[in-house]
Image (cartoon, rainbow over all chains, first blue to last red; front, side, top):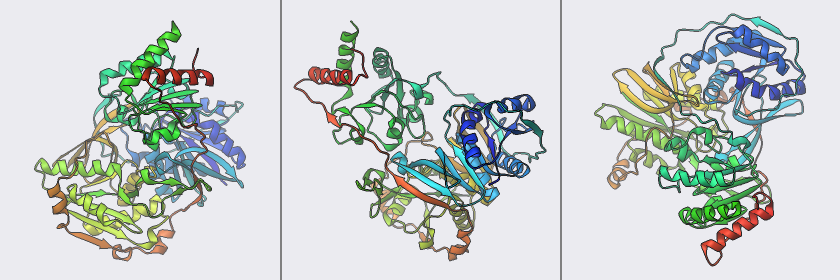
Amino acid sequence: MGGILLFAEKDNLAFDLAPKALEIAKGTNTELSALVLGPNAQARAAKYFAFGVTKVYMNDIDINAVFDCKMSADILAQAAKTSQADVIMCSSSKRGRVVAAQLSQILGAGCATNVLDIKIVNGQPVTVRYGLGGATMITEQMESAKKVIAILPSRFENTAATVAGQVIPIELKAEKSAIQMVEKTERKREAVDIENAKILVCVGKGLKKKEDLSIIQEIATLVKGEVGCTREISSTLGWLAEDRLVGMSGKRCKPTLVFSLGISGQNQYTAGILGAKVSVAVNTDPNAPIFKVTDYGIADDIYKVMPKLIEKLKQIKA
Amino acid sequence: MRIIVCVKQVVDLDQVRMNRETKEPVVKGLPMIIGQLEKHALEEAAKLKETGQQAEVVVLSVGTELADDVILETLARGADKSVAVVDKNLGNISAQGIAQVLANAIKKIGGAEVIMVGEGSTDDNSGQIGSTLAQVLGTAFIPYARTFALNGNKIKVTQSFEDYFETIETPAPAVITITSEINEPRIPAITDVMDASMKPQDNWSLSDIGLSADELKKYPAVKLISNKYPEQTRKGIMLKEESMDKTVEALIKNLQAEGVLEK
């Protein structure tokens, strides 16, 4: 198998995935290189050596100013050719995922997106991802020599020793994009790490109004936990930042205790709490699917349960 | 002008059950439904027409078999006509193969100024079809639309990324992927449902769009090794005491006994 080329639109995304890329490079007996694009590429390139990346291809071309999927895919295809990589590993961020697919079409490569993990089976990389809306785990293998693998943003622990690698400037050509930026607004972000929270208090559409988030927050404060939510609450209603989104399109969490309050339990959400040690759910509908993945359930209105819960938790504190 | 909305028919995920022995999902024989994001795409196309825009909305689906009631639902949701590419050779085809099928069908329909797909399918959610299709068609690709507007030949979309909302303009044609943030799909009125059965429906095979099973085989295949429910052992204890006070007390006692809540 030819080499592995690692790329992400931001260095931090690439560094999070680099240990997994290195593991696969070692397991398939090949070399790990990376592609660095944009301002200060030369200076940034050297940082990749700390992750065991031996060759860093670089070019100052900026693909982040205006996102043009085709342009990114074309550039990556050129870099894949220059580096003679057989496997291109990138982040399955929103941008990364669509670039991966377009790139695979250009290269005639197989493509796996939203990958959770990669394993080596019989010397070949095998990918794992969610199936059926988050209900199942699909393990699959690309039969083509060339592969594009987009891994969901997730931090893999770096255990590599720093290598004395090479920085290699390469020529890349981009056509002028027809996409014009009109306005760019930074999203409301919250500096919260629900992936590593010990206790999570998650809320769904059982919450009647935005103001009631204060009740959820009060419970979270009492149990020293973080507030998490379903896609409905963050993406559709915009009541909470997507940094708090738990599930297949958000964060995959592993708390010791999770409360799912007013959440029906679509696979989309439950995929994110598979790793919880103890799962508690409150929902009016006793047949809600959430109770299938619950250790302790209360089939009642969250507005009846929450005040009691607060009262009892305060008694523990007192 | 024409808008083509690509609709994936998926099994109703709420009805999928686990085979207890193999841990595999049982999907055979389950009813098909319309993909969730495709409802938003159809709603957006319908809204555009309501603003007075002269547009023909064509819904395009492909598969080994397609459910008539789902096609009728897409027509009730505002599409003017449906095109179904049904062929027994369309099973287990990679995103690239499906993109080629869609592209050929789109060409036979006569092309479109706007092609809408969901940002990811309800079942597979790989999110690969949009950009792959744009590559095959050689058109612009605009993912993750949370707003959509059309001014003459100009498409204006606000894209929803993790870090920014980016509003861009690009000349038509373009392939646009739709997010759930874009609108709230309506439930079709009875009159819409009745009208739906009067609308034209085309049924094509692979050869009708100039493709063969052999041609689809040239796309890189992905071999399924396993598709299983994750091992999960939950206690499934439902708490109900004589009062809410006692129920919540029981919950707290259990959590303390588990060692996950302080005493």
